[in-house]
Length: 121
Ligand code: FES
Image (tube, rainbow, N blue to C red; front, side, top):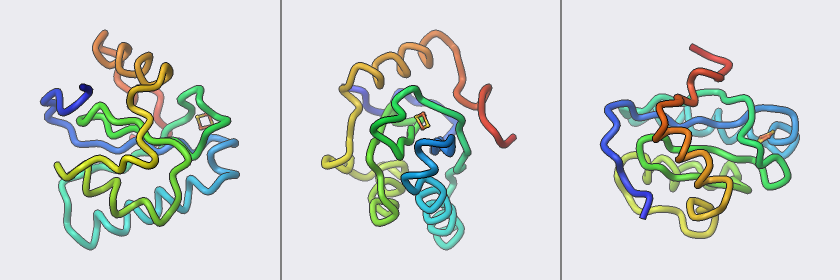
């Protein structure tokens, strides 16, 4: 349902705010960045401040796929990157049909860019 909407930007936003960080989001982000670098993948990994889904972190958004993942662990990074590179979703952690994900997608559709609130440029 929330598949590729054709954005030119290929970005994975990883929440690194307190709750997600305490659950290991920085390790997820670092693993994703390492895989991107190793594969020379055309994907940006971006620090994000909060998706308001703190209790189910670590959370991340694959912006160009309209995919929202929760309870992501470092071992999920390869599958998440695979999805960002047009592979299948990682079903076990895919929360793209959740209420909060729909709100995030609504903001994207309204023109709000997650990068506007990111911690990195
Ligand atoms: S701290 Fe990550 S969603 Fe709020």
